[in-house]
Image (cartoon, rainbow, N blue to C red; front, side, top):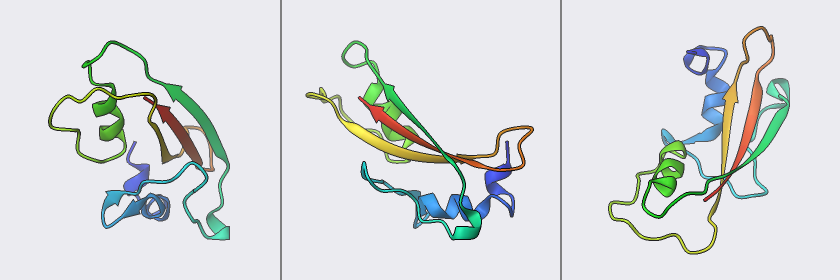
Length: 104
């Protein structure tokens, strides 16, 4: 669980942070890793649906490391957010970079 904060995980964490905040990536962007640290990417598209005002947009903001909107504003249409999450699965010697496309 603490792999990202270990010396082996710090370069991966540094690739997704900017000024100690999670960096926002566009749909076609990805973190820049040195060739020695290149890892496979697992891409997932997550569609969040539910009633108005239950916290879907706040959840996406929280996962992205940005503050949740202070007041409720209905999301018109679909907002797409791309997050990268490096992880080292148990039993694997190699990390994986998860690319999450969150559709709210």
